[in-house]
Image 1 (spheres, rainbow, N blue to C red):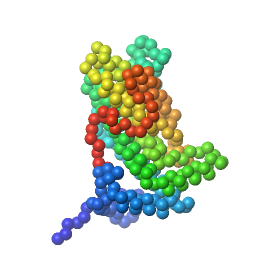
Image 2: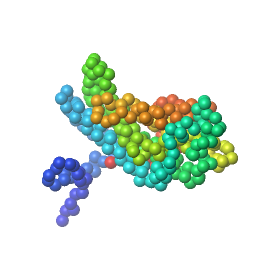
Image 3: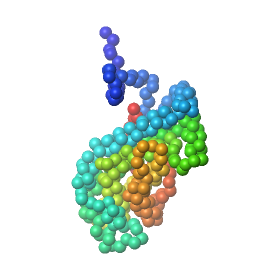
Image 4: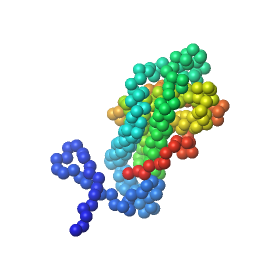
Length: 304
């Protein structure tokens, strides 16, 4: 007897009958999006061209936005599952983000007395907890790189959709300043909104990043004699690159809330100030693509 094929069962709201089953053929599965054969790439471009007519390109745009949003939510779930102890510990702490941001040792107005009020200084936290928080930041950077790879692949194959977005933006600029992001920026916006600013991830990520700044500043001192300053700076650079890439404009025509201001206030500005103040240590303060040469510490995972 022939074995029954196995597939991915899709659960969708509003379906009265049996849930549809999707079967992925073996020749359509690859570990990386860049490994697709040339024939598949041509098929993608042909399908995209047919879906970007004046009346249908919006549906493709919204579908890609939904998919990237789903992947960003999956990244947040992966972070919470893999680093539950660090996340829960930071959520339980009664620590003010505003106060800790002011107490960072990187502002020109900082004084030793102000910095000493921080509860994120290395002397206040065990080595095990500091390592767990660094691991959280390291995986967040890796999850961003995963999504950045996908959006780069989509951007290279959806030229017709990019053209449709340009045409739409040109029409909108005549009567409004509403912003509609391109594909690469959609991925960055979704990662910011649904991963970095997730209700359970935002505070732990902020506090872990602030703690990393304290560690970098204290590297080489008696309290961090065993820590490698170069590794700490590499991690800080990787996190900063992720934050700068995700600092994109909000989608003014979407139903989602605007998140740029809070993101810049609590993450981009403090980390940028930290990197700038530490630029003598050869920390790259420029905005650039995902840095895969930064020591982030785990192998890349295959995509679905």
